[in-house]
Amino acid sequence: MRIILLILAVQAISANDLYNLDNRFHSSYYYFSQDSIDKDFLIQDTTDDSLIIYPAKPMLYSLIFPGLGQWYNKSPLWKIGLFSGIEVVSILSGMQWVKKADKIRVDYELFADGNWDLETWVYNTLSTPIGNYADVHIDGTHKLTLKLSGALAEQFGTYVTSDSLEDNAHWVYTGEVSVLRDRDFYENIGKYDQFVGGWTDCYGQGNNQQWFEVYKDVGDSVETIITTPSKEDYVDQRAQSNDYLNMAKFAISAVMFNHVISAMDAVWSTQSSNRPKKEKKVKTDVGLLYDKFSRFGVGGVSISLYW
Image (tube, rainbow, N blue to C red):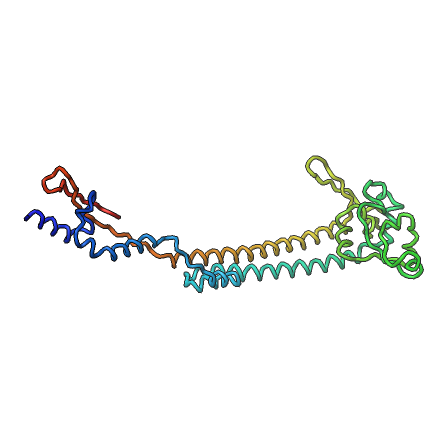
């Protein structure tokens, strides 16, 4: 009788479950506290480290202006300053580079207007040694747009292409034809040998030749380019303008990446701060082992450790 009372006392004091092999060794404490035990068990099982509160607001703030999401999350000042600083510097730099590129563009277009002439192009291409090069001729791969007026416009329309001058070179002496100086014009006269004869410095005083050949390595062969001092100057100006435009494109790319990275950081920071911390508890359990061959049914004591 004393042994049975001792067993019941040990069960009630030191264990939630003093049973391992047979439910006959559940204490009365187990049955009375079963509801609370199940509740605690469910709470522990449903608590998960991956619980995420979606950070819509800080992400939206960072997409609007990098750094705002970090400010909303109360991130360190260096992080707020980093994203907002990259944004401001990139925008201002891009604006300055676009402004410089546009200024150079205006300058090289004015330079071309004063140093490239349609009548000179027709004459040099048809009547000088420049036209002996395979790529230098009126009716070539690339074309300029010509604007006609007067009788020519009535007969042929207002706009024709430059290859019309192959058989009508006399048009340029009527004063009724001019070249449309659009974006394609300013690109073609500096890029293609076909239009090199239009540069007024192809020949100097006394009909001295000033155009010359430049050799460009294109990998498996060497390309011959026909150029003049004015054309070289013009090409350099265009290249400088394009360099500033490329720098402006990099600035725009930096702005876009800054928005995305700032938004991603805002999402990560919010998830990290809102993720519930799983409390690690160490639990012990003591139970009696059932043995049907034992006098009192107790074959030993089981001690378990859970963490």
